[in-house]
Structures are given as structure tokens and as C-alpha cells.
Image: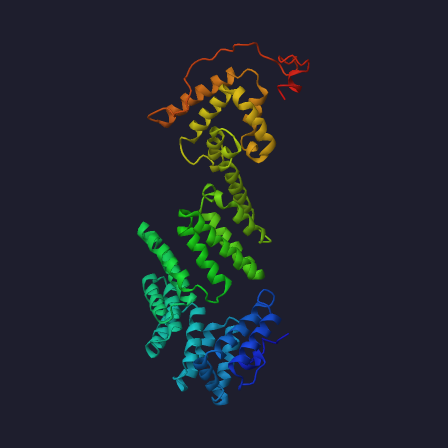
Length: 449
């Protein structure tokens, strides 16, 4: 195992000589990543990634190599600053980087590390000044523009951050980092109204088109596809499905890291979109959930609600009356409107009133869709047990009147029954009485079961 707590330069981290070519650097990087996978060795992976990012860029490598030519006393400051950063002592590290820059102000690589240490130490104002200086020195560098934008974003200056993100994208249009920053800025603008939502949707379309085919981390692409799904997806089910399929692919390819990002994506989707709206995408959401080893309780409950919504929307195809679809929509949504209880009571009235019509469907519902049945199981059990629903009809008739008065509704719901006293037309049959159908069994073991 690498001793990363010891000071090692980038060449040592990758096991290379300082004369290594581009192909050697790339091969060494992938070899080390296979050995030190990010989910098992996160700190080691950060060192390996930092070394690769520096050495694969010719300008950054040249600046890094220049550090090796520094006098030993100054070079020791650099290695000590790296060590301090690694242990979270960012203020002291920033001071050492500043001291190096006094001697070698031309080293932009050191200036970058200085800015990063300042940000890590919550000195984002000073860090922004350093990135601004770097952008003045190198206005054609898209990474400096992105880092300045990210620094502005951390300070809450979202318009300035968006301007830098856009500037970086004019320099490097296929940069997924730049698009991610722009999307983050646009998300902060949503409080400005519906227009901002439309702009965000257009920005996400533009981003996904620009980075198509670009190799990037799972996080960055899952981030873009998740927000594209949330903002514009449900207006077009096939398009939403495409975003979801892409997220599933990235989760599969991302290993443990992909699973963690998939958990984030599923949380975002379930937090922001009602279960009923996701019903048509239930098969894909189920596949996505099955790829995640640890689904939290609230997410599990939301997935169950989506599954129930999926079953509800398919009831009429299964030859159930539309009244069941309407009833379960209310129950599954959890009484979102003031009229929901009134409408639910009116539906109960009609199920009781036309009991002989609905009894077979209720029994079938109990057999084929037990979870849906359980949403209103006590009422359905009552409907199936009772042979004489007049009293229950009267109770619901009075409840409808009361709810109507309390709610101040202008009109009775279409399904509301007439308010009248209902008299029992047949004698009441007890649970232990002979069944009226003539089977010879007790009522509770026959038609009242």
C-alpha cells in the first residue's frame, strides 16, 4: 500500500520517471486506479487523480517540473504545504504557498494551489481575487474561468458565477465541468419564477447535446440527466424514459460509486415528483432501485406508492370500473384537496348502493391486488359482509351533507347521493343465521364471508 502520508511527488505516486511520455503516464494512471479503487482507497485515489491531472497537461506539467528546480529551502515549503493541506491545515498551507510566490510569482501552478487552500479554509473572498488574477494572466484558460465561477458560486454570487461558466464554455464547449457549474447556477435562479424553469430546461438540453460522447465521471453525467429528468422529462414520457435509462446505465458502469450516485438521483426524483406522476415509469424506477443495495425507508415507501399508482392506472385495463381508479387515486395521494374526503364518501355511497354490481369486482380486487385492497380494506370488508346496506347508506348520506356544509362547496359533487332517510327493505341477517341464498350454511361462512 502506498504511504501517502509521506511526501511524494506526482511521478513517485504514479511510479514514473520524470522523463515519462504521455502514453506511459496514461498506462500508469489506469494501472494505479485498478489497484487503488476509489471506493476502497478514497485518499489514495485523490493523490493518483491529482498526479494524473497535472502530468497529462503539458503546461501544468512544465510548471510542476519547474518546482523541482527550486532551491531546496523553497521546495521544502511546497512539500510541507501539500502535507498540511492533506491534513486539513489549509490556512498554514496557504501561507506557505504565498511565501513561494514571493520568490517565483510566475508559477501559476502554485498560485492555483494557493487559491484552492484559501477556499478550503473558507477564505473564498481572497480565493476569488487569486482566481481573478489567474484569469487576467491566462484569459484563454477555461479551467481558470470555471474555478473562478465555482468560487463565486460558493460566495452566493450566482449571476457572476453563471457569467464565468458561460465564458468557460465558449473556450471549451464540451466541458462537462462547465455545464455542471452552469446548471448549478440556473438551479439557484428557479425562485425567480416559471421563466427560470424554462431556461433551465433549455440549458440542460444544450448541455447534454454538447457533452454527448464525452468521457466523464458517473457523477457529472448522472447529475445532468437527473436534473433534465426533473425539469423536462415528465412532459414527454419517452424522453423521461431515455434519461432514466441513461442513469441506469451509468449506475451499472460506476460500481460502488455509481450506486451512491444512483441513491442520490432516486432521492431527488422521489422528493420532487409526486408518486402518481411517476406511475408510467414504475418498471424503470424498479430496475434502478434494484441496482442500489441500501434504499432508505422514505424512498422505499415512495417506491411502494409509485407501484400502487402503476397498478391503479392499469385497473380499467383489467376490467375494473372507473370508480375504483378514482377512489384509489385519492387514497394513494393522501387527501391532497379539500374535496377529496367528500368525493371519497360519495364513491363509498355508490359502491354500497350498487353492491350487487360491485361485489364481484371487490372480491377480485382482494385476490389479485391485495395491497390496493388494503388501502381501504376495512370499508371493502364491510361491503362484502353486509347483506343490508341501508344503514351504511344513510350514514354516508348524512356525512356528505356535513362535509358539503363545512367545505362551503358551491355545488354537490357529481357522484353525491340524495340526502334522504333510507329504510331497510329486508330483515337483517345475523352472522350466525342461515344464509338467505338457501345453501344451508351459516351466513358468515357463505355470502357473508
